[in-house]
Length: 186
Image 1 (tube, rainbow, N blue to C red):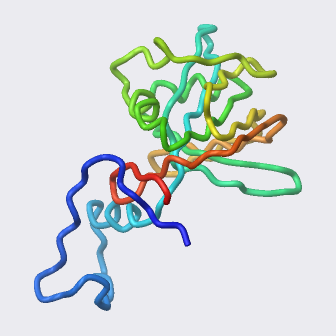
Image 2 (spheres, rainbow, N blue to C red):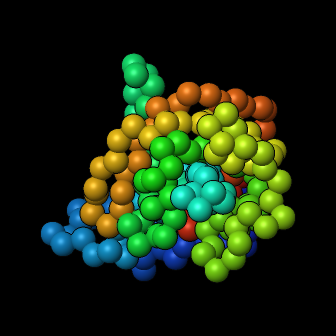
């Protein structure tokens, strides 16, 4: 059994008045608002990655993502999503290849850094170019280099589907995101 342990201070979620934690939930209202949708989605624990690419400008670019999934084994395909408003999206669309770096529980600060848009995300970050040139971050517990295979418009995000061409992993515990907080596993 895997148990989550919170790494950042996060208050416990309030329980509705008159209801004990774990009690049966009433059927959803006919209209689901965005805040409630986000709270529900936050109940799905995800791993944390940094997607990286060499941009049109020849510089490394990256962004924290937790919207990753393996799609297919034959052919091997993976996907992640990027908000259409993110400036980095153009670099991924033009790049042709990218890397996905799986963060360890010790890399929360790296995740926070690549989630910000007001900093040079690669300043003082240890990385090396992979076979495709996409940045591979040091000390991650896994990585994939992918060729961009397809993009799909999906609401306010773009789904990027890639074909893995190279990868690697090492032992370690993953960085997990659950209930709007970083967690590790015990």
